[in-house]
Length: 252
Image 1 (tube, rainbow, N blue to C red):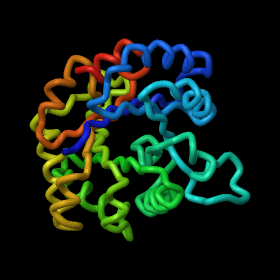
Image 2 (tube, rainbow, N blue to C red):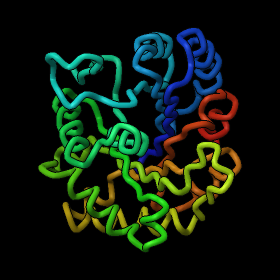
Image 3 (tube, rainbow, N blue to C red):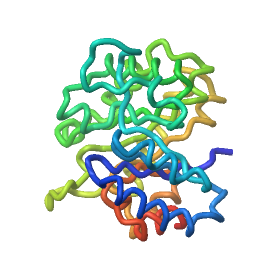
Image 4 (spheres, rainbow, N blue to C red):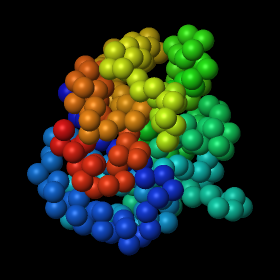
């Protein structure tokens, strides 16, 4: 049975004081949540603070990225070794990393391997752009991303990988022209991903790999989205910044 994973991606938001306030309020309301994993991914500078605040709770801390290098002269980078002990998961290949920092599938593959080597579970983010969707390339794009990002990843490795499907065209980011994905859109792609994992690996890995949705999940649509058979959780952006809002998502 796949345990749902509800993950907060805070992106470039929240000071240390705000992190402390959020977690202290939030953990008191989620002490009884033992039927799903609840993950918070703060900025790098707040990871230790978040970790320390959550020690007496069932919250899990993750990072928003990880370096492709183990160590060395890479100014500004944060290695998996530095994160080990504070983070259980790392987001890798998020659409914003791909768009703004030009990360490609090859780099994502390196990051996944180094995270796993250090004992950090990888959340592989994949998804198509609006142009790719309009050109009916969704399945081709998703298949290529999975093939290239998971190149050299073994059956055993897959036990520590979550896939997050985040259709870029459905992530508003304040764009009023953005159209949300329908529940059928979401289920269709999640099922395609699961079927492809069966081809690439085997049916057992396909059945057990968690595939979460990262396209503007909110308290208003969480029940519909999570009602899909092949949706195993959510990667939440804006709706996770307010603890009351995130609480509704966790306790949908």
